Length: 300
Image (cartoon, rainbow, N blue to C red; front, side):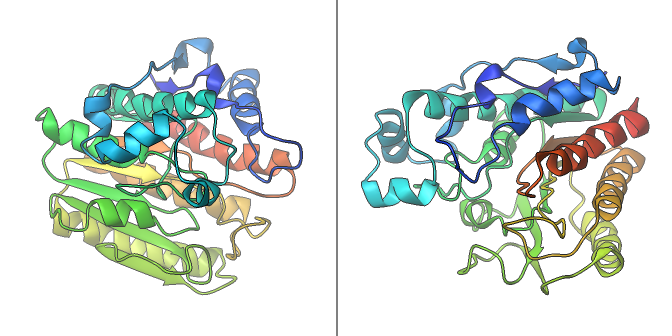
């Protein structure tokens, strides 16, 4: 059965007019259940992560300041959310959801987190709606518990996974692959193990050709025994914060190709949803829902 991390705290109240579409965390599970892609049994509620798991990726000083809401004002502005205890608790629960997803993926081949993909979180600070790097935490959890040795992170959000690149910059056991918009945030990129920076308005044909040429070679080269997939839907041409030109159909084909590849090669995969900022919330929901529909079709 497809297992999906979801918690009511994922939908955190933000001030009116905030550009982050928090409503999607309420609407997406409803849509999946309404259309019959999922049932209530597919969803599980993660708990709050233990510090020991966070500290494999983030510094004690940063975690302490974050929990105490004592992040320096300038650094807090970089995160982009009004900090609160509930918001920090939300982040701690999201990270545990990804860890739980890892263990489900080892059993069932795949698991999903409705939230997550917080790839702008660095070792010692957060940025761009990201405070703790959920997939980095998941990767280190697997390795610390002897559940995986070589890990591949496939980050196809429109924004480079700069925090993930920094966390694993000196760790050859985790290969970081980011395919993103060249002209998109972050404007000062970090160095992933493989970065593919796409030109503005790159459309389906070119995007998919590059992905289908790159991913099999990368897997053959690195021989991962676990894959993290960050399936941000901000590659859409309609996205307010993205500068690529992909269609809903192209975004779905991207997901189909990645998930089918993992399935065919029998490599467990944990998926976190990442970004999506199209003006109409229904576009965001449809693009994310496609990822879950394909996971059900391919695996179950």
